[in-house]
Image (tube, rainbow, N blue to C red; front, side, top):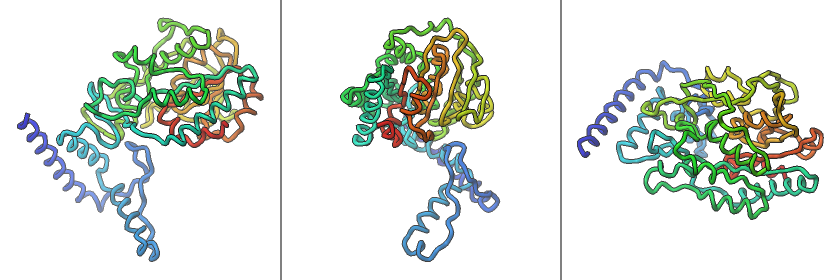
Length: 376
């Protein structure tokens, strides 16, 4: 074991030295980058010199950020850094757990209780308003992979307690869909991506069945759905933080009973006949194939034999995969992302004759979303 560790350490050091030499040669010839495809964020630009900023220390801090972001072969350095940490016995890098069975899981250990409670109370206020008007509403807090696939976590890896968070939501009076209880019975299946923080279509399907049961309805059995592989080279957000070449790419699969639906984005700004925007499959954000990434407002027409009723889905990106099931059972599905929507939700519900509301968020996002209080 010691020999293996030494060989691995020497290989990492050799790779780092080689990369350093190449970076030094490439530095003067490499133009600055505005955006990192791996990290999905804008990179620091060269700061403008200002005497006041210089003496305050702000310039040196900004310049340090610039050097860090613009180092040549930056993405390769992140990979080497991860290998170095693994060689030292660490099972975490960049806020990601390097877990068993080639899973990469976001680290989620704490949240702001004040904001979490404020969000719960705002959603509860909307529920009380809708209940008086005979409109059904549920809240579905989706656990992160590390809260469900606990057997794959590194030893002693801390994770925020889903059950405690769920109790706080229930104490606020919310009608909850306990997704974790459902997913716990399917942990040997592919319910979360290995390289991304989202659930797969299979995981979303199990959650959809539970919600339909609570509503007094029944989802179509799995055998009724067509499953179509959209791509097989997917590597998502967690892999972009920890780009290990040893972690294989995976598939994104669509589930549908009717492949085509009329879809309108942002009050008709863009209209199409499918919820799957396949242009994203050729880019770096392939999960955006579901519902054209995150739009402020989307309306999906149900299939020809869909049931009655109009669903309003208030969601973060976990809801994008979920929507492919709902549009088969409702006359219309209205999808709103509060991070971008600027209207009044209560007015929208009245104007569009909404009959059902589902608030669907990854629980980590629910705990940090500053847009949810607008529902109160």
